[in-house]
Length: 288
Ligand code: GLU
Image (cartoon, rainbow, N blue to C red; front, side, top):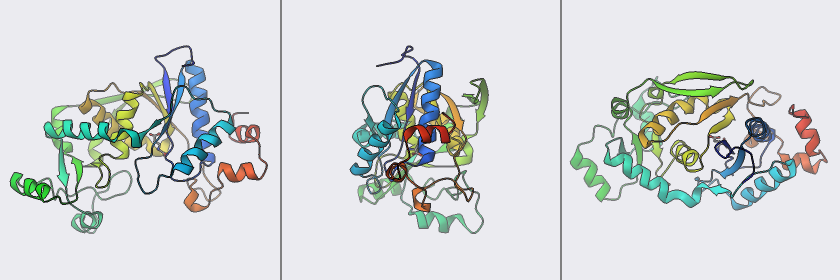
């Protein structure tokens, strides 16, 4: 491991479902800057729980683009797909304490049951109307025994009753000054924390991995700020210390929206092919 303070560790955690673009480069560079400022390590995590969208060639391309950009990472790379049994164990632990319940609803069924103008979570999805929360013990058991496809939802009211708030967390602002915040996990409702196809979700894996990798500071985009409210509750339920957070501004495209490969944003690979240098990218993103 490099770095002068082993207790300070940051991570960059891309999902390998597309090539990295300037938004990713910016996030990696903000991580690099905070790691240097705090005298800590920076580790790489590949968030590849999605069995359909994650591709091995994209993982290789991500590592190659980051090396090209000159970002150094400590230790080995953690790939979430290699830790599914850890996530499964966490679901079992939450289940044994009554914090989660199986949900047999398809996405379409949730939308239909939520009605025409449902309350929505911070990502804009309808809050889960609770269809499977009220299933009887016997009904639940018989559906599980029949092998019906199901995910696992957090029983948020149950969880909040057990770990009562206020749920405080700390953030660093751009100048490195610490601010204190109170999370409001209830705005996510009974969120799905294990999907039908994999025994986890972004929210569960990220909380487990930040703890497993000893992450002291989570530096990520402002688009994930609302998720932090939920992560604070999951940390409390799983007995983890919460890291300090910094949510950085997003790099926007010419149309003012977040960069995305699906909207045709130029990838670092495209920029490299055009002869753009890593130094030019760093300068363009304010790290020159
Ligand atoms: N994997 C997420 C992404 O690529 C980042 C998650 C995080 O930093 O918490 O957007």
